[in-house]
Image (cartoon, rainbow, N blue to C red; front, top):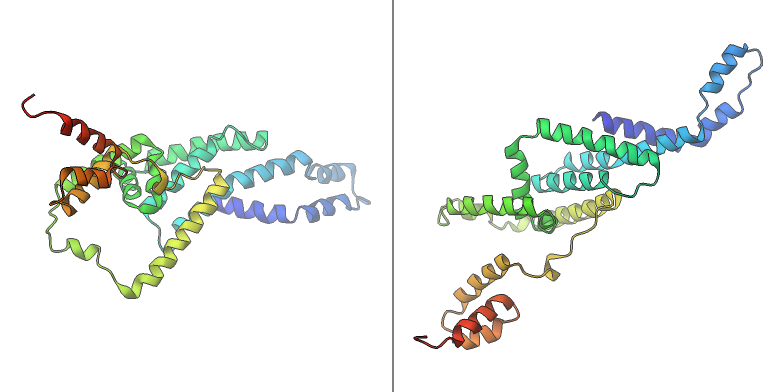
Length: 264
């Protein structure tokens, strides 16, 4: 909150830069002692002073935008994960507009890391990764962090093993409510807009759409389980001929095993 109030103060001050400079430039020093005049002149903002204030404003802006988004109507743990990772990437950029940007970003990185390590519980950190794994909007962003992705996948698999798929309340979570459809669509659009704007501010590169990313072995196996259930009575060769493009690895494995003669 203190960082956000500092950002707002700097934003207002910088928007009146010309007025501030004019006040001191046209100051009438008549009637003042040399000491008083020297004191007033020392308050004049130099070019470096303004550059420092601009850099501080720029470096604090992502925190202001992140706080606004996470304080909105639909904050999620998956969004929190995306915000934290984006901020960390922003701090560690090799390119900075000025020396001041580099120094301030380095300081902010260590400060934010300290607060996250000291006050964010381990269970909450894991929860954010799992939420991002299960959220279509942020799943692709999680893939970029291999260790986090594998941890989230492992936790999800363990949870699935302990979950009864026939539990009565399970369907209620995914029930479709026609009256909420329009608001859900609007919320999704709002989240995508925030994501795009936040990446522009932090300089984070957008992850490739999942639709054009090559299928991992896990995804391919999951697709196979779905297809084989829907095509239980189809001939072996026809099945793999129809789905070789969707299942490129498994189709090669199937071809190898199909060519092995019985009894060899």
